[in-house]
Image (cartoon, rainbow, N blue to C red; front, side, top):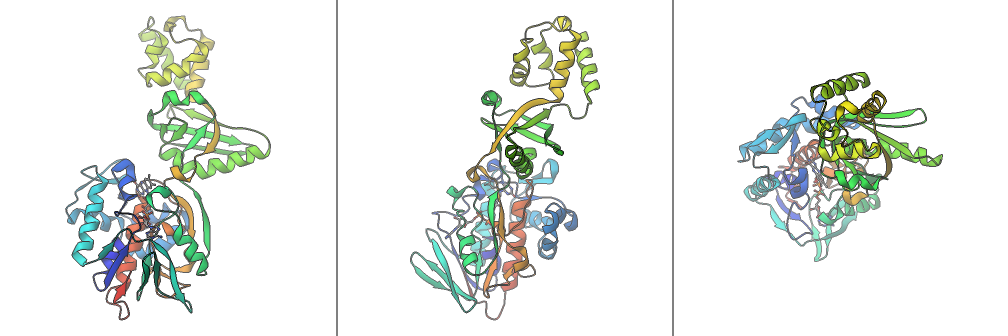
Length: 407
Ligand SMILES: Cc1cc2nc3c(=O)[nH]c(=O)nc-3n(C[C@H](O)[C@H](O)[C@H](O)COP(=O)(O)OP(=O)(O)OC[C@H]3O[C@@H](n4cnc5c(N)ncnc54)[C@H](O)[C@@H]3O)c2cc1C
């Protein structure tokens, strides 16, 4: 939508969408609130979030940065707010507001939108793209911008069609694997904790000499763990799990609910908590620190739930402190692509001219958004790639002598 509207400032543009309506995935983003960008004003710092691949973004970011995205949406009647970790959301808390701005932008620049229009392939001749095949017949164009997305949540329409066509056209496409994806644990009782979330938990996993340890926001689900901490760790945890499996071992996880205190400090705080209320049952004491459902689960194996604090032996208290610093779980598997937020993989970045987003393999073709092989963390970084690459792609065609008709 962004690419179409921008290109339409100097061209006749037709947008083809196979769904009955536009932005099906966009409406699901950010839990329906759409974390539409990360408000990091420094392009170099923003690019660093994408690892080595970030260098490719510097050129298009110079044309449309995260600050430009904020300004773009705000100036088109969508006030926004910035939450923790620089995550920007529409003030309305509605992804619909983001979609509305894009639809208005397309209406202003005169994009002709055709829904229910499935593209079945590119029309190629001698290394040049002449248009697209659709279920209703061919559509010829001077230029095609491909924005068919990746493979996460295929029910939204992102079924990886573009990857197939681009491979056939000579592009190298790294096969996508779910990247930002939640994980399942072996413990079935985890469902009792579904919905609990924590702003700061340290997650640890280790196998042989390799250790994973990071702190961040964590969410319990019906089958395991999610939240930014887990989503960003998914690929590394899966690699550790594969190594463990190769040696017929399990991958143990540990959750530290008090990452700012060392083990000794947790124990000292527990002593103080008990001293203040010696007659209160442990479950009630600990519920001043943690959600009661988690407390119940922490205490159930030791059956200490109803024991008054003053009756807790030193050994039992110290083992409880250790549990608060290292709640054990067993990694089972990553959930499949249907639960993934983005899929890693996509078209090799070396094969795209990032000044214009034009393919270096096929003339008359540009590539934008999730089609490109960027790994990115959660926090608005995916949609920023979309805005940045789409703006550059559209801008490069604006007023180009041959670019009078694009699709
Ligand atoms: C649950 C969820 C939450 C997310 N939340 C966030 C967030 O808060 N912030 C963030 O930055 N990112 C988020 N993302 C990632 C973000 O949604 C994507 O990066 C973004 O939507 C990619 O945009 P795109 O235009 O490249 O592809 P898509 O949004 O996948 O759009 C591709 C479009 O092309 C259409 N299409 C595909 N094939 C064809 C065909 N053959 N013919 C015609 N049309 C076709 C599809 O129907 C679809 O409408 C989230 C993703 C998911 C799944």
